[in-house]
Image (cartoon, rainbow, N blue to C red; front, side, top):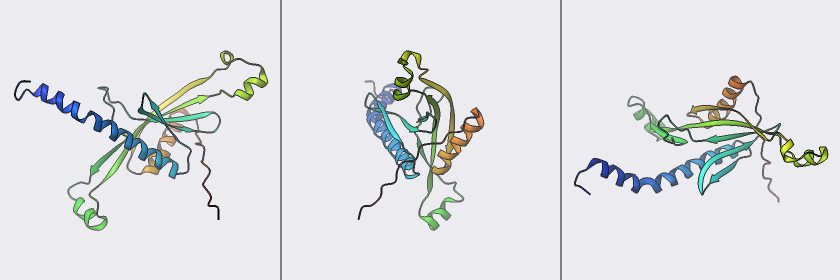
Length: 179
């Protein structure tokens, strides 16, 4: 390595932080997944080759939603959550009032798919897998919000406005305490 060669220094730095970026990406995915389940929806973390791929939310009428990280025009994957500090004018007030100096911004691609595969129906109608349509991609919207509930509900509303399809995520059964 040549001393002070910026290309080599950047390459070495990238190799050092690459494992940290993988952990950070998984942590953000777990936080978004936990937020979705706290809102009462069913959700599943999907991994591909041991890395976070997307969050899958089943919906009514054979639809399902895939929440994945946004890729910018350069092919760089953006994190699902970004911490942004408040403006210099408001930061001292928020630190004094709430003890915080910023908030998270949530950002993701929301893709909706239609899956009409139903094993029982296929058996009843005497159809093979080749005769069933299978999965269809409906569309995708990019959404960003500072409030988590607005992040989920706003994306569903934006999707409904863009594609004229109403999506109703499946609710999870609340765990009841047994006395």
